[in-house]
Length: 142
Length: 258
Image (cartoon, rainbow over all chains, first blue to last red; front, side, top):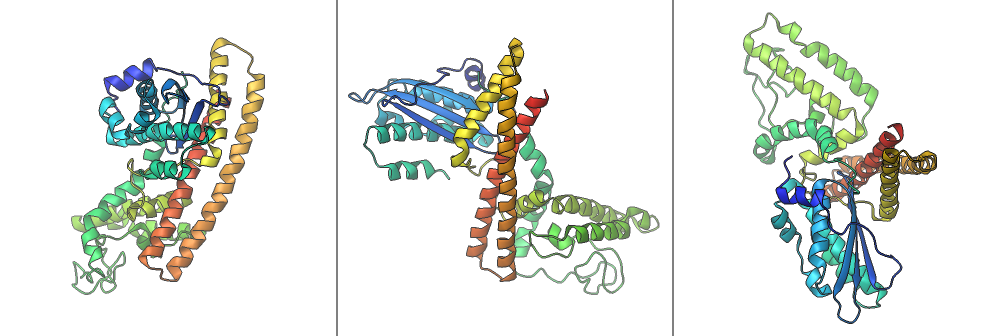
């Protein structure tokens, strides 16, 4: 399978690899996975509770190049965005940016799910939000 | 970097190679099977109704493969998932002998080709049906429930934490190996994790057998399409979880042996 240049670039120089303190009340953690290729993706964001701006984003992904590139790109995109802006990122945006082939679309879906899961986790910690709405958003792809 | 290497689709490809091959066949013929019972095929040789078997019921000549026939039908089996594997093997040997191209050396080129075609189908069908996982994958591919690359696969959410930790340990082991560090502690930890996930795999296999029975019951009961779809979705879900865990167990085994 031939990867696009952008995927290879992210794979070789992944942005924001690492982790944040899971217990920090301002940190939201999203852990998502897909079988078959065995991908697991952890995406964490540090969110300013006053401005609702995502100040920091880290990821760790075990999986193929496309999954790593998708999550790397996701951390780049969410940084500096508000929670609401980050929630509007669609997996199709990632597909377009990275020129993912059809068999790798699930990697971008995983990245979108990870963003939503991380924000949902943060909202839960902050005592806001409607977890049911988050779940249905994450399931909209299935 | 935490890339666990290219685990990619090699396994998926391998597992579904046979099933896809036959799927293509069934796609090509699906329009015919949907219009109801397949038209009674006349024997190419004697024009009698051939009876749908490997050989004409009247003149005994070898017959072309029927449109839309599946691997189950090839062995004269219903589309059930619990199979008497010893009986299947026996039937395979009988058919191998009957369809063997050596029996057709003096026959026409047309018949020799039919024998070749049927022998090859026999081998594919047997290899697929004798393995429970390949068997159910085949059924789901054929019914359009499972598609390569497009179906969203869901990891078992209750295991994600453990899966992630296991991957981190694997990563640590690789790093420590490269740096010449002490591996013994890590090996013990991974060995325990491996045992744990092996047990989970066995639990899933038991669950798979249970949904096999449920499916077979609904086949026996002549369940409607709705019920069939529901059962197949369940089968698909268990399969997805299984392949996830199986990949993990395999990766850990590889790393521990390395």
